[in-house]
Amino acid sequence: MPSSFPELSQAGLPPTVTISAVDEYHNVQEMRVADERALTIYLDSYEIVTLMTLGTQPELLTLGYLKNQGLIKDISEIRSVQVDWEVSAAAVTTYANRDDWQEKLGPRIVTTGCGQGTVFGNIMENLDELKLSPVRIRQSEIYALLKKLNAYNDVYKNAGAVHGCALCMGTEVLVFVEDVGRHNAVDAIAGRMWLEGIEGKDKIFYTTGRLTSEMVIKIAHMRIPTLLSRSGITQMGYELANELNVMMFSRAKGRHFLIYTGADNVEFDVDLSAKTR
Amino acid sequence: MPSSFPELSQAGLPPTVTISAVDEYHNVQEMRVADERALTIYLDSYEIVTLMTLGTQPELLTLGYLKNQGLIKDISEIRSVQVDWEVSAAAVTTYANRDDWQEKLGPRIVTTGCGQGTVFGNIMENLDELKLSPVRIRQSEIYALLKKLNAYNDVYKNAGAVHGCALCMGTEVLVFVEDVGRHNAVDAIAGRMWLEGIEGKDKIFYTTGRLTSEMVIKIAHMRIPTLLSRSGITQMGYELANELNVMMFSRAKGRHFLIYTGADNVEFDVDLSAKTR
Image (cartoon, rainbow over all chains, first blue to last red; front, top):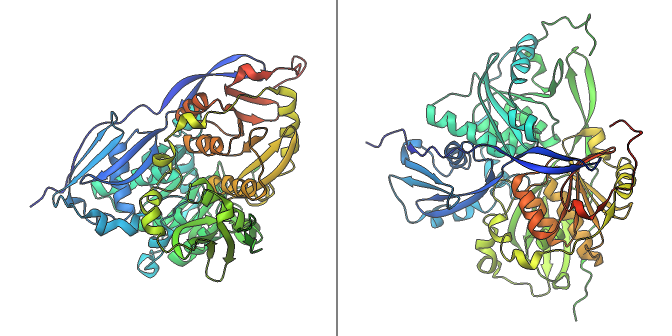
């Protein structure tokens, strides 16, 4: 009986470095900059993909990537995830220790990625099975959560050039991850949920990034019914959210938001009449 | 002797649609939203990749993708690019009309993409050949260009959720493209340059997006020595810009900018002493 807790290395790295820049006054400034790194995932020594990442939680990113790409169904199949920055590699070992991953996965991983080279092709199948159960939420809860989220986004505040994602419940932030690509941040959260058996149905997913089709689909695969974004949406993200019963808040910042889907399940319990927007 | 001008369809679509949203006052607002679409590229009927795009210039995006991925070396090899939104497909026909693209390209396109599933693995080879010749530029030119660029970014202003990229020369904006992913916008510009034989060495590349390693590498492949971004940079983007002699301006907005590489080639000819920042 394999353990359901893979052995993980602890290879997280600091997310930023300091670099000198010259500003418009010809003054040198010391700036914090996101420390992007390449991480190549090997599944039983078969090369799967190279991700560009901050590398703060490479083991969870690797787990979440395998999960979200549907490469591994059950985490108990995974013996260990060992990240070694000397070779920029995340070595995933399964109990099965297959040597035929290429035959098994080859075509599936051709279109991996975000925006370019997308998971869309595979992931758009079986949408009906993805439908979520609508939940009710209060405007006051959204405001309380947004207020708490202000305390996060450390890397962004220091260095920019990253996206932040958070797994939330009620008005609490359970997990917050930043990475150079928003898909990596989502995957790291998915990895954490997978590892700890955290359910999505009672959670809220927050992202600083845009709600594109791929984001909506990924969150739906994580079974999270409520999506909160500081940015905008795309028409396809909207269509998918509609179809999958995902409640979608965009432009959520301070007291402002725009609800594109699921507005009927939002209780407007805050009196803004006295406030200016 | 094949023509050097492939036959292109004219399947460009409008970039936005109007969708109703409910704001924090429970008022319904009609919002412009980026109209994201899937476009699958077929090379002599071999499926290469599915891109998520606004679809405003799908033929140029397809050409630029093939060019930037190194899938086709010479544009004269391409007979036609026919985009059909009924089937969300861009059919690329070559004069050779190969039936062995999978054997030829298979491994190369496994890691295609941005951030997730990256071109990094292939594209980082032969960096020495990529080195660019430094150019000199005036602060006043940068300001004049930034001022002109304010007139663009239509989709972003209307709908958000997109990135804009521009090909510029001196203080003129030659080409401006917006798309849901910044890599698509870059590729559409690369396609235009490829189609019209536009050289990069005397150009400036502007992007609203972040200067990550992949962006710097792509622009270097386009032989453009000057990079101007409204956003931040990553440490790996910085290292590559250094190595490739790319002049890198970040946070360029209004009169502000931060020069990370190539500052010695910038002539500070604007007196800001009287101005507030």
